[in-house]
Structure formats: C-alpha cells, structure tokens
Image (cartoon, rainbow, N blue to C red; front, top):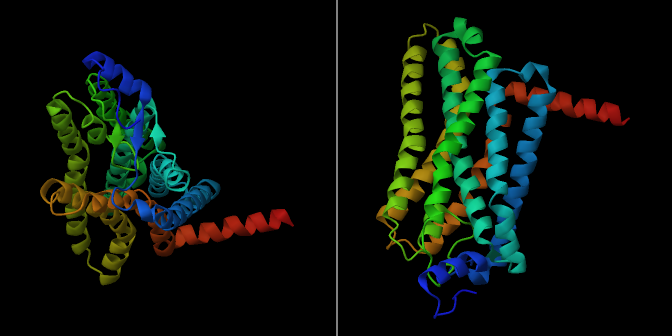
Length: 326
C-alpha cells in the first residue's frame, strides 16, 4: 500500500491514492521503541482526560465558579481534551496494533480538527489574557464588560475564526494530484505532511499555512503581549506591595499556561524551519506527540494548585458525591 501501481496515469494515480488512503508509520527511526513510547504517552493522555474532565465538572457544578475567568478555563480544558483525542487514539492504535492505515478523507478530517483546535486553543488563551486585562486595569467595569452575552460572542468568534482559517486547507489539499507514494512519516495527519505526498506544486499550500499561522497564532501572541504590558503597568502603579502581589498571583497560572502552550510550539516551528537537517526527524515527531498531551495534562494541575477557588470547588464537589453515595 505504500506504493501504488507504477503504470497509473496522473489522474488515475490521484484517484487511486485517495481510494487507497495513507499510511501513518509512526515515529521513523524509533519503530523498535513504539511500545515503550506508548506507555508514557498513554499515561499522559489518560491523565489529561481525567484532569480536564474533573476541572470542567468542578466549574460546571459550582455556582461560585460561574465567572468569566473560569468559563474561559473550562473552554481551554475542552479544547485541550479534543486536541489530545484527535491525535492520541490513532497514534496508540498504531503503536499497539500496527493500525497505520487511514483513509484519505479520514486523514483530511484529522488534519482539519488538529489545526482547528490548535487555533481555537490559542484564541481561548487570548480571551483569558483579555479577562485578566479587564480585571486588573478596569476592575470596576469588569462585570459590565464581560457579561454572559459577551462571553458567548467571544466563544462564537473563537470557533468561527478557527473554522474560517482552517476550512480552505481541505480544498487546497483536494485540488492536488497525488503521487504513487502514500506514506506519511508521522503519527497523525497534518497539512504539509499530506501536501508533500503530491506531485503538484504545493507553493500555495506552503504560503497559506504560513499566512494562517501568522494571522491566527501570531496575532494572538502579539495581543497577549500587549495585554500583559498594560497589566504590568497597572500592577506596578498599585500603592501597596500586597495589592501588587495579589494582582500578579491572579495572572500567574495564566502565564504558566501561555508559556506551556506557545514555547514548545515556537521551538518546534523554528527548529523545523532552521534546524531541520541538523535535528533528526524523529525528534520533531516525538516533540509533536508530546506537545498534544503535556500541556493538556499540566494545565489542570497548574490551575488546581495555584487557584484556591478551584481547589475549594473540587473538595465541595467530591464531598457532595460522597454524601449522595451514602
């Protein structure tokens, strides 16, 4: 299945490739370690599901947590779970069962949801930065600015923007003519991995991918930095050291999550662009797999440890569950 018949015509090859589907071969160069690598990846995936699931249940079940900050946090937890779930089950099936085949349409679907959820994750982090900006820079107007209607509009805009940015990539890939090779050296389908199977010119795909990244994640990073510049200016104008400490503590968890999300992503992008030949390919793929499980696993821990309201809400939720079971 890795190679299609050599006598296929250009259009026939394109049709056959789509009918045959693709082969996700996992982490090239580390095939002998697939079983061992699957153990920590599966553990982190299960921990991410459990941690984010508990976090969402705590926020939904505790009326005291029905505030903008925690609603945005539940949105982040939801996108984290979906992002991990869009990649890990297929990767683990590949590692354990050798289930490397995926249909062409299935590959496009997985690609769409991975990129869609990544862009949505970035937008939620921007919304959380805006929440902290309003809370610290305009505390008296916080309740009037971040109303339920505004939060709903932010959530709708997040999903709409992600869809608009990523949906054209499906048609950009479908327009291509594909070669006889249908092997993708990865554990999941991503835009350029599919495009490189093509015999056609993929310049449009390359430029579109770059533009999409700059107009989504790139702009989000800029706006987050601007938000925190204003936040720091407002914090250092506070007269009391205790007030400054309290204000900074409210941002601490969010800053940790931002760094956890963007630093590995930027490192992976720059390492691939500028160090692609010096850094083995399996390192890039291994980092990509760790990236979709480590931040989702650690985010609930960061917020659970640093946020007293969530800890208190979790204790109340579990105590209510124990009481009801009796």
